[in-house]
Image (cartoon, rainbow, N blue to C red):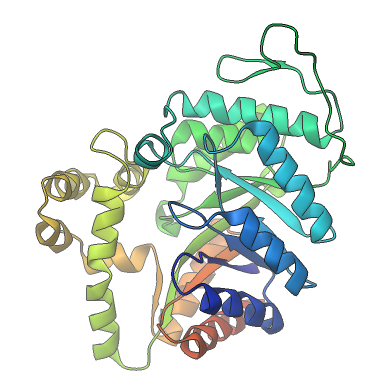
Length: 345
């Protein structure tokens, strides 16, 4: 399996950037840069392109609706040039709270918007005149405008990944993308994702070998079981936020993903309590099993076993989020996890 990490520089930007630079020295394969509702990804990626030389650099993710499809393609082509071909484009639809609440853009027809955005980006990457008449994207607008092509060299070799959790978006990923950026992954329940991803691959005449399955999770390795239990307990509120607070009461992709993987008996109540303002009550419903199943937290043997389960389930690239406040602590954990992955063979 390949190794990856993800950074976001809204908080402690210097430490996040130093972490990425040191991770390359450890031999990391890919560094993804998030933006969510904080710092933007392309700016950080441009900085890293100048400061790194080997590892791939990916947008994890650029959110549809925050930029036009052509603006996304322009950023991707620019970053591919600046990084000497090391850039990977990661796209996602985000959620209604961020897109509508922060950017003031309607969160409508996300599946259609993703499909049409990818088609436009592929046109731009191919150096074609950009002309597209879809139901969510129309370029050029009707009137006197004529189709144009970018003045930059084509970039057909830029890998395109999609962040997906819902069944239909997973099918689209299998049909159109070079990689899948996943999260909330339980290897024992992987069929909840893979049956939809594989349906898209089959529809496009492709197989699992044609796509990079990239899954991410926090990694924390303990020698002391009491410290491990305390860490697991501290993560319950964060998981409750993902299940209950990411998105809105009507649209929460994380809630749906956990429901499909075996926790439907509790995810609805976590959502209800969180949305009602009972954050402690929501966290109280999160079990140790829920935390451990979707993370890489535990003793060295426990984490090694989980990594083996991820590999056997079909994960190609592991996106590691090492726990810890201090830079040295996070780097040490990242190095441990990378050694465990190398030991899997």
